[in-house]
Length: 501
Image (cartoon, rainbow, N blue to C red; front, side, top):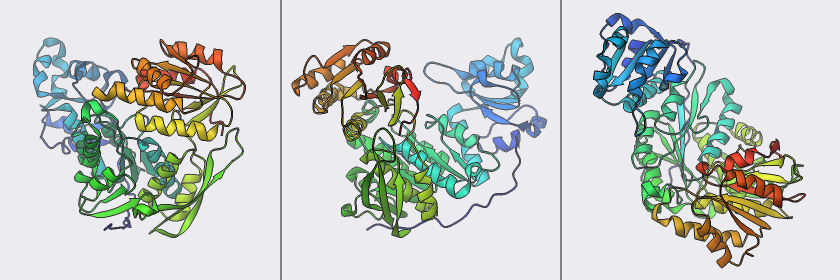
C-alpha cells in the first residue's frame, strides 16, 4: 500500500550573511579541528575550495587525497595564493614541519579525513540555510529529471531561489561543493547523486539530508562496482534507506527493483509509473506532436496524480518514451515539494533537450543532422537511444557507437547484445569506437547486418572522418558512447545550429 503525500511546509528566506567565519565552518565538523590561533576563527571565509589552482583569495582550502593525487601537498600553495585557512589530513603533518611552510603553519588545522570534512561542511550549509532539498539518483535519466525538476522549481520560486547540480558535480566531491556554493537567496535545491561503488549514495544522502528522494530506474551500469543488477538496485536504494523518517520517497512503481527498495521506506511514499502498475502519478494520455522542427518527437502529455486529480496537460518537447517517464518523475517530485500544477506545467513546457542527452544539431558542413546522446552510455540508455533514433527518423539513419564502460565480466556479452540490437535498427552505416568494438560488430553481423555497413574505427577523430564520408542529405546520425571514448568530442565537431527541434 502506498502512502501518498506532499510537502506543504515552507522555508521562508531569511536575511543571511554573504560570508561565514572560519569558526562557523569548524562548528559543522563532526570531528573537531583546532587552529593554533583562536583569533583566526573570526576570519571571514568567502568560499570553500578543493583545487589550489582555483584560489583567488579568501577561501577555506580543504585538502583531498585520492589514488592519483594528494591535495595535502598543495595546501601551502593555496595559502600562498590567498586562501585564509586550510584543512589538511592528520597523516600529512610532516608536510608542514619545514621552514619553507613555517609562515603558513598557523593557518592549518588537521582532520582525520578531508573528504569526510568536506561533506560535513556541506551538510552544515544545508542545515544553516534550511534548504528544502530533492535528491535524484538512478542508472538512467537522473540528469534529465534533475533538470526538469529544476525548471519546475524555477517556475514557482524564481531562478535566484533554486540551487541545482551543475555538470557532473554529482559525486562525493561535487555534491558537497554544490551545497557549499549556496547563496543567500537559495531556498530550494535539487541535487543529482551518482555512484560507482556501494556506500556512496548513503554518504551523499547523509550530507544532503533531502526532504525528497527519487530513484529513476535500476539498470545495468557500473557493474564493476555493483556486481549485477541486484547490486545496482541495492546501491540506488541507499537513498531510500538513508532518508529521514519525515522525508518523502518518490518511487518508480514500473521498475520492480526500485519499487522493492522504495517500499522499505517507513515514511510517505509518492509513486509514479504506469497506471496498471498501481502508480499514484501516471500519464493519462500521450499524443505525438510536431512542434515545427525538422524532426518530430514532442508530445502532449496529461499527467494525473493525487496533487493533480483533474490532470495537467503539458506540451512536452523532449523526444522519446523514456523522457515521458522522466517528465512524470519530475512532476511527482515537484508535487512532493508542494509545487502546484500550473508551475509543473510551465516548468516542463519550458524544458528543452540537454546537451549530450538527445539533442539534435544540424551538422556543420553537411546537410545531415546529429542526434547527440554522447554524454555517457550503458545498456539501458543505448536501447532508449536506438528507439529514439527510430522514432525520429523516417529517412536514412546512421550511428557512431562507443564502448560502454564499467560492465565488469559482462562487458563482452553486453556489447554483443548491443550489436544484435543495432542490426534491427535499420542503419545505413555504423561506426564503432572503443575496446569492445569487435564484440559489437560480431553481434551486428550475427543479427544480419550487411558487413559493408559496419566499420571499426580507431578513435573519435576517425569517427568524424567516417561521418563526413558516409552522411547524406537529411540523414539523422546517432552518436553515443561512454564519455572516455571521446564520442562527445566527435559530436561537437559538427555542431552548427544547436537544438534543431
